[in-house]
Image 1 (cartoon, helix red, strand yellow):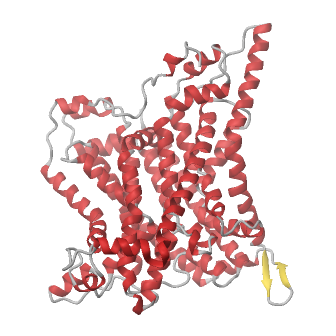
Image 2 (cartoon, helix red, strand yellow; image 1 turned 180 degrees about the horizontal axis):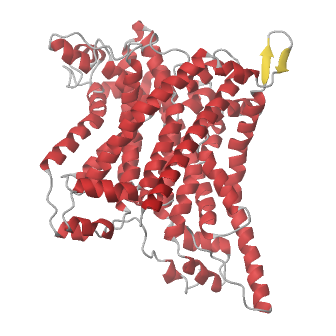
Image 3 (cartoon, chains in turn red, brown; image 1 turned 45 degrees about the vertical axis):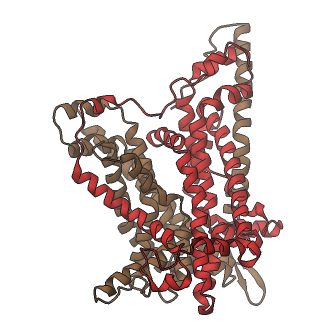
Length: 308
Length: 317
């Protein structure tokens, strides 16, 4: 890129990053003990099932049914359980993990690329039909995606796409909310004068997007990416109807099937602790992703939530 | 929103020609930027939607195969007790669970934003964590917690010498489901509201703070009106989410088969119709109607809030 635009491309005030609200701190806002206690009690409610899951993952099947649910059992069997999670049915679980990573990863990358370019265009260009297209997109937020899944299944079926990874990935590429979020974010994050300056320097529109726009959209892109990742990672309905062979299942469908099998067959009791430990394994990656990337998605949401 | 990026092409002669040429390049670029999204959008949203509409107009007969049925499927759905029961159940869900969930989310967001809580950052993440848990796993965990034989709640009740409550009976399962959904989504809604609260310029309420207004009054008179758009967003998302409930009934079905009927939620019903009964045409009509119900309710909510806003603006001097 031309040298003259380079300094301009440095992040000017990135919106949403922690605003200096020093006045409050300086005045020494007193903390409320009552409110603190109340809010930590609330946190107990949100943590309880996860705490149970963690405890239950350390128990063997006997302890699972005979000892108190919210404390450790007689034997610490986490390692055994993990081994059985990854070895049951020839390591099918690992296949589910890989499938989930593949489906969610590709969908999230695709969805954020599509949403970012579209949102950028809506924020920074005026073109015939822009208002109409954006309204159509907003209206689409209201279409229940699960209501679409059935006709999509039938269409994919006649195209021979069911029971392939594409059946899960293609419908997950559309994120109308992502476009909305990116438009709001881009409108704030990229100043028009910056784009104008790049144009004067003779940069083409695509180069401006890539070298000026995209850099300033970081937190917004991370936000859209994470939410698309979660949407696909946690999706159950779509893969349930699209996929037949268990080697193609993502974690959600695989775990649900295991759970149904262990609930139905009293003899297959050994599966309970496998299902529980498998559930624990399945949620760890997303929680880590949210923790590691929290600075970005919280900044990305700050602008997205306020406007319009 | 975004200000116009086009240069004012007022100058005469060659400059205007250059301006309009660059305008054309820009328009072309803009179309190319939105094109990929709308191609996928058309293929994955518009086409299936149209196809569902088309399918819903036919009926498959044992003899003679498919035949055009007009709106017969819709007429059937509107008098189908299973479908209406599901819609009724979800309306109850909407009236009870959504206000509780969003009320708690708003309270938590305001409390965290007030800066009066110790460990606010950790709390924010703890509240949000359930959002990262798949609905399938959430339902599975709560299913175990609800269990009559070895669930911890039942264990506590039994150790106190009381009978264990049945969270999964036909009477109580809807309430248990409301709890699962509340657990899953309070944090998500809280984060959206909290993010909006952080975006309010603090000058807006600093004066009120100095004047000694209580946090409660500041929240009610300044903060909540300021984040109204974010709140509306969460309401609309909740309406959509409620009518689409599928994971929870589908998974609870395996541990509480007596309590979960085929038409427990409209979406679960459509699934059962299409994949168990193989009645694709009727299922398409149900899915279409469901989309209609959601669109109408979301639209009414938006209209209502717009009217309320206009009234508020008028009443201001």
